[in-house]
Image (cartoon, rainbow, N blue to C red; front, side):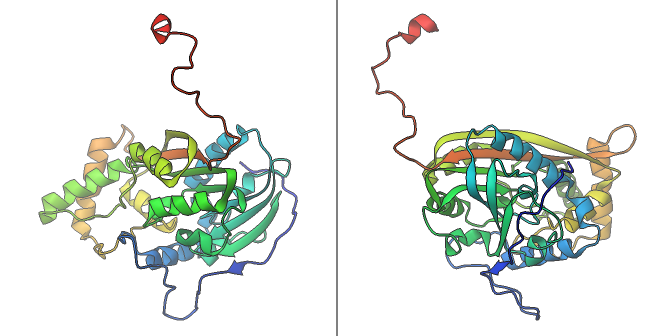
Length: 326
C-alpha cells in the first residue's frame, strides 16, 4: 500500500473541541438523541491507541477498507478542489489521494493524538487538520460549502447517525458527494457468539461487550431520510486470522476500538474469558487452531439533490411494454 508522496502542505491543526491535559475529559456528549456510546471514553481510547509506538502496525483493517473505498472513489468521474475526511484518524483515506483527483483534504477527528499522529508523513495533497467532534460537523464547516465528504470507519461510534447524515448532506454543495464506509451488523459475530455463550454458562446472563452496529438494510432508508439522491449501498467482508481470541481482543483495544457503550461492565471474569476463548475456537477455529474474525463493511454513496441530476421519466412515458421484455 506504500505510495510515493510529495509534501504539498502541512497546515496547523485548528481546534474546535476543548481538550485539556488535566483529569477532566472533553465533553462530547450532547443533550438530544439517545446516548448509546460514551464519546469521552471513545476519544480517550483513540488517544491512547495513537500514542502506542506500534500503532501503525494495527492499521491493517482501516487501511484495507480505505483501499476499497478509494476504488469506489476513483470510479466517480469527477475531480475535486477539496474534500472533507470525516473521522479521518491519521488519514487512512487521505494518504491515498492523488493531486490530479483532489487538491486538498480537510481532516476532521475528535482525537487530537490520532489526527496528528503522522504529521511527519508526506501527503500528495494539501492537508488541513481540524480537531472537532464528528457528531457536530456543521460547527466547523458551513452549510452548502463542501464538494465531497468521505468517512472511513468512523460513523459506527456516532450516537445520532440519522442526524450526522443530515449534517453531512447540509454541508455539501448541491450535487455534492458523500462516500462512507462503516462496520455492519455482522461484524465480529464470532466474538459476540462466544462471549454470550460463555457468560450464560458461567454467569447466568449476558451484557454487551461488542458495540451495536447498524444493519445493512437500514442504511438506504437512513440515507433517503437524510435527503440524499442516487443511492448506492453494498457490503463486503474483511476476514482476519488470529492465533486465538486473546490476540483479537488485544488488537481491538490497541486499535482504539474497545467497548464504549454507556453502562458497560468494566471487566470480565477471567474464567469467563477463558471459556469464551475455548468456545470461539471450537465453533469457528480451523484445523491449525487459528480463528477468523469477520469485519462486515457497509459502503454507501449518496448525492445531495441538484436540478442538474438525472431524473426518472414520468410514469407512462415508456415506449416499450415491459411485458414484452420480461
